Amino acid sequence: MLLVDLACPGAVAQVVAKSETFTGIHRMEGVRGRPETATVSNGKSFVQLTERQYRTGGFWPPYETLPTIIVRRLPAPNGLPADRD
Image (cartoon, rainbow, N blue to C red; front, side):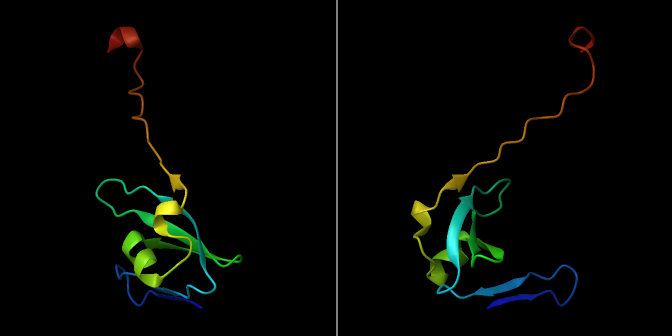
């Protein structure tokens, strides 16, 4: 069962996913102070949970064994040629 409650703008989504039907796919590194997340799927849909939600939900496999996705953003070029910086 997947339940997302978005009652009003700015509300935090409440996600309920049964650990019997949803399994972990991967985890993502937290950036800019955001927590690390884990993505779980039942084969038809997916949900992103915080590390804490994943661990307390009893999902399989253990959080430590999930493959990690690390995203790094490069700064945008300033648009000036190198000799005019």
